[in-house]
Amino acid sequence: MPSRNIKRQDRTLPDKPVQCWAHTKNGTRCSTFVVSREGEPVPVPYCNLHLKSGDGALRKAPHPFAGYCLVANFDLPKNYRMVFWGNRGRCPASNKDDRSLSFYPPNPKTGRNYIPFTRTLKTDNYNGVINPSFTGDLLQYASCPGPNERQNLRSTFQYFGKRNGKIGGLEYVTLEPVPKNTQLCFWYGSGWWSARDIRRQDIGTKRYPAPGKKRKLCNQESKTVPLFCVTSIKNAETVK
Image 1 (cartoon, rainbow, N blue to C red):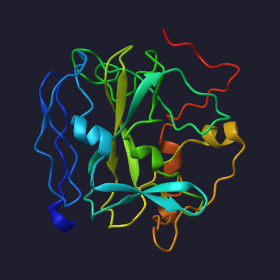
Image 2 (image 1 turned 45 degrees about the vertical axis):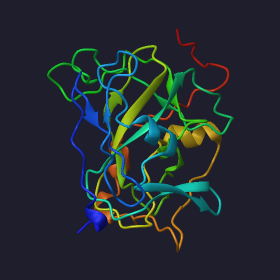
Image 3 (image 1 turned 30 degrees about the vertical axis):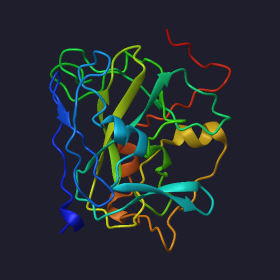
């Protein structure tokens, strides 16, 4: 059973206030309701306090070679929801320490970002990136699993914000129960590594372990669409 009775949150609905998804550091669900900040159909579901401080169910922790990693403060249930959020804008050069994600603003009426009557992500509405630098976002510290590890977190393609808005977000959910002090990690996509000429390596440590790869799921990484911005400084797009 999840410690401190941490439970998964409800999905957001367009044009309806949503209870802040975050928990306090003692495991209590935030009671503040979040409303649209700039006319967006579905706002980033964190109150202003937790936009600054981050979800108390998570924390960034020092890592021997990655700088920081993201770990669970409590036992988290499967499908626990969290948001990767930041300022919307141009994609930084890939030779810098960026963690930006591509932003595809949701439909202003439905709040979703799928081609109608399908489960296919709509990708012809690119609108810059979500840049978490200089914000209270914690998911920017989630590492990519190494060759002998697997992801325990994935995006749902539920975006928050609006086209040309100031901030944007992307929903992530846990794929399995995550024990306290375990790292939260997701697949960055092979393009992220090749664009930076970095070699992948296992990120689990004795203090903050990462889930080991299950051989029967060895091809699972290929099913995840990479969303990290891999644009180089020479072909960075200008966002209008």
